Image (tube, rainbow over all chains, first blue to last red; front, side, top):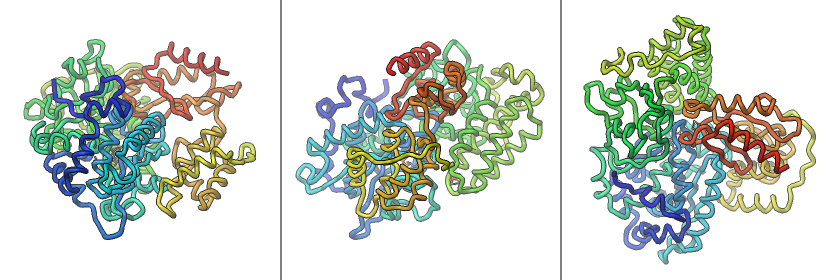
Length: 452
Length: 171
Ligand SMILES: Cc1cc2nc3c(=O)[nH]c(=O)nc-3n(C[C@H](O)[C@H](O)[C@H](O)COP(=O)(O)O)c2cc1C
Ligand code: SF4
Ligand code: FES
C-alpha cells in the first residue's frame, strides 16, 4: 500500500466536520507554521518538498511563491483554483466534498506564508453543494479561532471567502479566473505581467490548485525533506489521480508518484483492470488536453521501459510517443471505443469553451469540430485527415492562452497514433456509423509510425 | 438574445437584498463588481432565470452599467436567459462520460420527456440539456439539477425513470 497523505483519514466517519478533523491531527500545520515558523521558513519547506503544481502545468509551488512581489502597502492575494473542469478530472471535487478542512487548513498555511490577509477559493458554479460544504467548514474554523482576527494570538489575520464561477472551463486558466473573480467575462489576460506582479485587482497574487494548497499541510507536518523522499526524481510526493472510463473501479486514488502505469490500471489497489474483460485500447493520462496514447505506448516507453506515473516518465518521448501527467485525469478506453468519435467530442468541447478572443482558437476549434463530425458520420474525405493536422498546427502556439494548444494536442495525437482508424472512417463510411473499428494492432509492442 | 419573453416586474425581496449586501462585503472597497456572479446565482435561484429587468436591477444595486451585467450573463453557461422548466436536467455529454453511455441516457431522457433539448414540457416541470464535464467522470453517467445543483450519479434508464417520477410527485 502506498503512503497516503491527503486521503489518510478519508474513511473516518465525520471527517468532514471540524471536531473529527481536529481529533485526527487537523490544524496542527497551522499551529506549527504560525507559532514556530517565519513566512520564509514556510516557503522554504515547500521549496524543499519539491511539490509541483497539481492543477496541470506542474510548476514548482515553492518557486511560484517566492516570485510574489511584495511592494509596501499593497495587499497580496492567494486565490485557490477550484474551477476543476478539465474533462477526466474530479479529484478536487472529491477532496472538497469529503475533507473540506484539508483545503481550509492549507489555505491558512499558504496565506500566512504569502502574507495575504484576504483569500478566495474560486469554485466552479456547478459545485454548489461543495460551496456550501466549504462555507460551513470556514465558519467552523473561524469559530475555533483559526480564521479572522489575531489567529492563535499571533496578530496575523485572515478572511477566507468562497466565490462561485458561472460555468466556463476557460475560468480555470489563472488569468481568466482572476477576470471572473473581478466580475467580468472570463477572457484570459495577455502575460506578462504575471499574477505574481499584477493579479487580482492589479495586486500581487498567487493562484494555486486545490490539491497543491491542501498538500502544504502534510509538507509542514512532516517537513519538506521527508515529503521529497516519496516519489521518483523531480516527481516528489503523492498525487491524486481521477480514474474514469472503462475500468472496474473508477474513482479518486492517492498514489505515490512512481507506481507503474500497468499497476495503476490492472492492480486491485487502483483501477482493478479493464471492465467486462475487455482489452485496453488507449489512455488519456492527464485530462482531455494531453495527447492520447495507444495501449502499447502508455504501458511502455518507446525504449521498452515500463512507464511510471511521474511527470518525467509520462512525458518520455515528447509529443511523438509520450504524453503528460497534467491534472491526473486518467481516462481509460477499451477496445469498443471509437477514437474518431472521442476526438470529435473533445473538439466540440474546446470549441464550446473557447473564449473567442483569438481567431486561431475560436475559428480553428470550430473547424476541427466540423471536420471531425463529418469523418465520424461517414461524410469525410481522405484529405480531411491532413487538413485536421494542418489546422491543429496553426492553432498551436499562436494563441493568448494554452486552451488553443489543449484543443490542438488531442487531435494531433489521435491522428498520429490512430491514423488507420481515421482512414477506415473514410473508406468504410457505412460501416463507420454502425460499428467500431476495434482494437486493431494498437496493443502491439511495435509503435505506430511517428513524426517528431 | 435579450428579447423579453414576458416583461417581469422585479422587486428584490428584503431577503435577497440582505444576501446581496453580505456578498458585496467580501471584497475590498470599490471592488463590488466582484459580487456580480454570486449575485446572479442568487437572482436565478429566486426567479428561475435572469431576465433583462433583473439584470438592470443588479446593475443598479452594484452601481455598474447594465451592459457590464449583460456581457457577463451571456458569457457564462449557467445563467438562463429564458424561462426554463422548473427542473432543468443537465446531463454531462463530454468524452469520459460518453465512454460509459452518457449519450444513450441523454437520448432516453429526451424520449421520456417528449421534448427536444432546451424545450420545456407542457406541464412546465421539465427541460433538459447537455452540459460539459461536471467533474464527476468516475461516477458517470451523471446529471445535475439546479438551483442547488444536486447530483445524480451512475445513471441507468431505471434510475432516470425513478428520478422523474419522484420529481413529479413533489408537485
Ligand atoms: C484552459 C485552462 C484550464 C485550466 N483549468 C484549471 C483548473 O480547472 N484547475 C486548476 O487548478 N488549474 C487549471 N488550469 C491551470 C491554471 O492556469 C494554473 O496553472 C493553476 O491553477 C496553477 O496552480 P498550480 O500551480 O497549483 O497547479 C487551467 C489552465 C488552462 C490553460
Ligand atoms: S486561446 Fe482560446 S480560450 Fe485562450 S484566450 Fe485565445 S480564444 Fe480565448
Ligand atoms: S465527462 Fe462527464 S463528468 Fe466528466
